[in-house]
Length: 150
Image 1 (cartoon, rainbow, N blue to C red):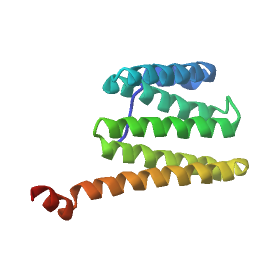
Image 2: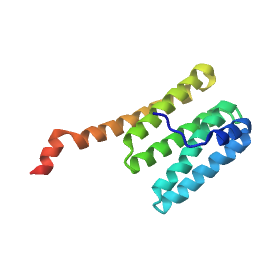
Image 3: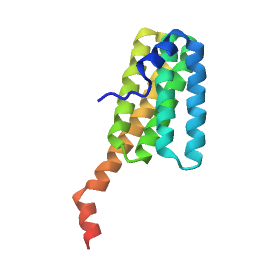
């Protein structure tokens, strides 16, 4: 399963114009936040998803300092995963966490100057991912089901 929010044409436009990608990232985050504030979670998914892909393009482009790019990529991933969990799509949230960790590790291997930051961000995301797994296991455990039947 692969998450895709940008159409190929838009992805290409952002890839060739990093400043436009940065603008689209900010717009996506802001729009998603506004939609979340009024409880429109499903509509917000599209916008934060586009922001997530835009953040990855920004990180690849080198248009902003690497530390900043890694940070916005990770924070956008967390926002996307949180929203996916909110709408009941835990498996997709787990995928976002996994893809984010893999992508950050690639940055770590390519650029040693962001090693510490990537380790910190990866650790935080792995902890979030584990909490989602623990929550899912807790909600489906036989002891929990038995307790609710009595």
